[in-house]
Image 1: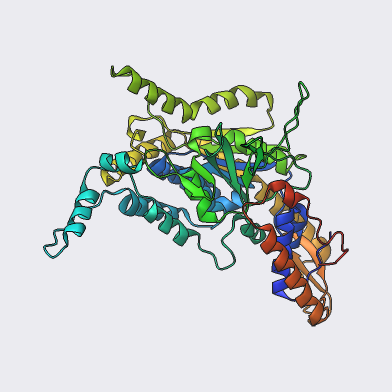
Image 2: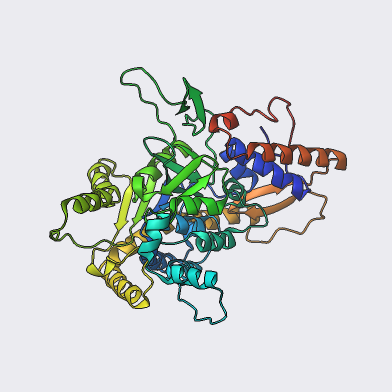
Length: 494
């Protein structure tokens, strides 16, 4: 498959989308003049869940931007998160928001989503309206009994749709053509048994990558999941992708990853139902390593940065009702971020080429609720993070130096190479129809204009747009996409 640049933006955009859908990531990167993975290796950012404690993650990320002089999306090749970390991953890696904008999103969450409604004293209100006001102003525990969740997700979904709206397309895969990092968020698919990790991602795997489909098939009157990775051979192992999709809307990925039981309703699309990704991976670092191996199988990981939203010190559990204690213990165990940290701290020293950095403050002030709305509590959390940053300033400096190393190497290479070709002078301006000489992302390029007939251009655009529309049906299985061989069979040059 080849990609030839045309002067028609509609064709270029449709062609890039087709390449993204087909998993031709390397060809896509070259076609949109995307950045290459640094010679040192991959740079990965992972962010834990934690609800409103994501404010702590934002604070640490600000320190990294300050120390590096670069924005987060410029520093990492792969960005991922769970729950609140997933929202940040998409905000920073897909929407390219600033950390100040992310902070504002959290404040809006506190005001509009998690705040308990205040009743209005309206004499003219009907008895139905007054009953509704009474219901809304009663304790949130009453809502939990009736609806199964503490908060309504309606306002949350409205905020997400507003945040993720994009005139170029609202699907995850459509962001792949914008020269942004690879991004994924972790959710839990609970409409299957047992519940499974589910990866919402803005990329497609290359053809041949083993995947587990999340499509249902009927066998002997029961519904089962179809799988392309299962094997009956003893000791068989082949690295395969987690269940997931790149064909959902961006806001849906955040909503599914943040559907924390008790706090928000489950998220459903057709017969599929998701809950918070913290159930399976509150710390998604292991998932990030797996995805990196699938996307870049021949590339080592150079820098792995994992950021938590804060934990509380271990203390004696107060006596209570045994069955309630057991439920709390199960929740703590499922949502623990420390077990992953312990595993990585044990295994990664065997791979000394990987620079691993973990930031997760342990402080009583980090023990606030996921839906905390009190600004005074937020300030206490902020103070705890400030102290943590001060006491870990040298480690943060080391992170920034490691992350900016590719930029320093590129600048030195560029400075050494430019005089050879340009002799310290600017190239002469040439007429538009002739080949032009120029620098693009530190690479010397020779470009020539290409002008196919207009009928051919429109034909390609229509064909590509039709393919993209068909392939982006979120209920299709992943394997069906991999089998599409458009353009190659027809030997059509895009």
